[in-house]
Length: 292
Length: 292
Image (cartoon, chains in turn brown, cyan):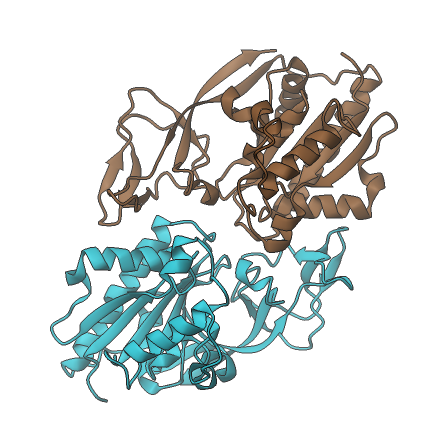
């Protein structure tokens, strides 16, 4: 494995997710916290206009603008399309300041704890994820679909991943999640430093991953209006098993709606505020033990 | 006391506070739920444009547009100023459909439980609040300052009050808070019905109220940027006593900042997302037992 000498810590890709944005602001004030002898770290507040406006985005979701098709499409000129091209032209492999690894910091209203979403299945990222989850049970690893992940900011770099933390409301700075995320970043930097020194930290060779199976939307009427809520028994139960027949929604009129699948699944991003407009009430995943 | 025969249940005054907005949608579908033999109830989704946009407001905070000065100022023509005038011209005492009582449903990211904020200190509202808090300890009663309350939508009617529920994230529909709020509304309607029948429900003659003393802003630098977060020991501790010397903030650099007041206070609206832009990290209140 080649050395990881230049990395980027990115926050505020969604402007109303304050944990990452304020961590970037902290690291700008105290840059020594994120430097290691073999690792030079840069920070990026990736959508400062959206952060200033306290909105997820100005025109469109920045974290869906990074497919190579979109980046090379000169007709796409929204604020976020322009911003994506700028970031690619800075941190990308042909950019002005190419980095070896990107950590993109997000938060969620779902009970995702500290979730790592790798941009690829590169063994180095899986080893890092296994190390992080072995020392902190709150760390979970989720595989999104490759056709999604290639739209993410973290895809600018082969070794890119998202950290999703929560539950935390949009537009709220939570000391708990700020501290937990900062501690995770410190652990990652120390791990990279040791890898560069040839000291691969001891890890389990197995890793639990949650692989996206499908998205489930809210029940809606013919006008698209939501007719049911996440069932109270499912709320905040991200990563817990959901068995066939168990309730997932409660209609406004107080009727439970059951999960009709035939196998046990593990829902994540349950009741994420930003996904209402995407038609996603939760993502169903399957749990898998992999050997790395 | 005169009869309370016509009331309005209002939701979505802030478009990203879903509990009230979806309760109004439910009651539109099932109007019988909110009718009583002596009480005719109308519903109002008060800022449908902000609800459709999933934003607190389009131009300005609708719940700060109802002072009599602003309502009579023809030069104020923002979306919310126009909407406020429409609501006044509908539900107000000289309006097309004057009501005797208004309940305006809000939600908050702070741990406010089920908070009643009376628009005035009218004895009827205090008796109702005392009844509600006597049968449900999660019900608290907060007095905002009169100079604030007169800007609220609920001030359109002498017998108006706000219900604030939480913690719940903006843009999230929470079954727990939906159900608790609906139950509270049912209790209120049943109470009004019995009052109209001359059966005043038995209540304690004392009521605990929390009176606004002052707002506390986040520590900021000279550019107005936030330099500290709500201290983890204070987060979600709304209505609990805060003693002099106890920590209220934690700087980004991990330094605790203590409360420097000289008396015990009771903070509310701690870390409310919508108040960052208002320069409010929390509201300090004093606790008082009143006899009604």
